[in-house]
Every structure is written in structure tokens, then in C-alpha cells.
Amino acid sequence: QVQLAESGGRLVQAGGSLRLSCVASGGTFLIRDVVGWFRQAPGKEREYVGAIRWSDSTTHYRDSVRDRFTLSRDNAQNTVHLQMHSLKPEDTGVYYCAAARYYIRTSSAEYDDWGQGTQVTVSS
Image (cartoon, rainbow, N blue to C red; front, side, top):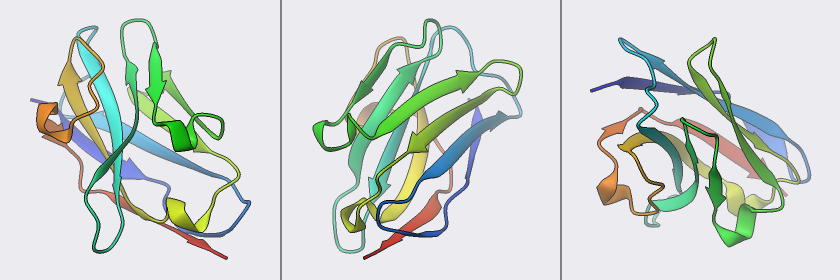
């Protein structure tokens, strides 16, 4: 089990950019790991944003963010970054990172370890 911690969320104007980070503590990301990002807006279900496979940096995104968000990994810092550009008010929510095994998964039920989340607010 790996402990995850997100950071980087804040208030930003529409059209702006943010970089979120997810660091593994008490352990390291392993070749078998997949790190996913999810978000949850008030009153809405948690939704998948994207995921990256630690072994080869293969990425996958939900359609609405594919051209605006980029996932990357930093082996030395044991961190996954979510770079977000052209932010929209509908991107507002608490962003969570989570870890799964082996394959990229889009369902939150398939992720085992979760961080506490970081708030992203995009003002119009």
C-alpha cells in the first residue's frame, strides 16, 4: 500500500493553468503501478480525469480534457504531475490521485490507494 498526497490546487481564472502533483510517501511508485486522477465537483459523482502507467508513461484521458491536460512522471521525485491548461469553470472540483496495478483503469472502484485531494476552483 502506498500513501499518496496531492498538492497544487488553488483558485485560478478561466483560461489559466495549474500543475497538480501527486507524491508517494512511505513507499515508492513501482513499475506495476498506474496513477489515476479523479475529480469531484459539489453534488456530483467523482469522475475520471486521466491516468499514467508508471512503467512506460502511457497515458489516457477523458475526452473533455485530452487536449488541455497532460500527465507526466518524475522518477527522481516519485511524483506524478497533472499539468492543466485552458482551465474552464467546469474543471472545478476536488482532485484526487489514486494508485492501481498494471493496467490503466477508468473506474474509481479499481483504484486501491487514494490521496486526500486538492481543491481546484476555476472562476469565470
